[in-house]
Image (spheres, rainbow, N blue to C red):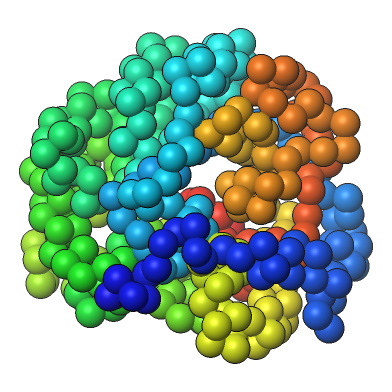
Length: 346
């Protein structure tokens, strides 16, 4: 992907386009809350908190076309040590089993390794949402070893098993670097059969399409990556591109927005809606604001309906039974087999 197509991260997610998907009285599409009503799921509520997902900032060494965070090398939003401490304090007084760290490239936050170490000290499982190429930066040459030493689960983005498709979405040369990083992780035991070092890949469609069945595309990835590059991994998460931020801009620019929304609405699945990740997860923004999910975070839709919206006022009981803030983009998580940070949900 050329620089001219990537643009600056600030130039992309225009307020007008964002408001369109937040408020879209559906642009002729059925309101998401109506779909929930018909499924006897309205209002959608949390069913406890099993995962605390924290976005430590928008700084990233890549600028990907589909990025819903609008992350990039020029972003200044970054979680401070004070907010990181509040996250660990909240985790410590709960039974939440998993800390899921994302970004940007979360590893570029100076507090990343402290967060991992503290969460592991508390006996919690840790997930690192890694873009792979960060593992090759000179400043991160020991990062893969650190992750392995702390038994961190790695969920790594790889749009496709061919260079052309991956580079079209993430930038020229990213695929080759990603393969090098995957081999580095494999050498430490990540993704190897029988290993406790979990390595999962994330697939996003390139273009205005829904992902194919997860097991089918996983089989293709495993076969092609092994045969072509000798790379192994445990499982593949197929995630629907959400109609927000850079992907929304792409849809609007290419006149695919209405068609894509029709696909999402038409593929609404009540079983997927009942299993959406926000029902068992809480998202923390880089400034400590609380959200139902990372997508609501990017649309600046904090928790509402009575729940306190900052990590400094964390109350597990109220947050664990909160009413979830829903808008039209929620169709992205409920289409077909469903979509979540862990892939298909039904």
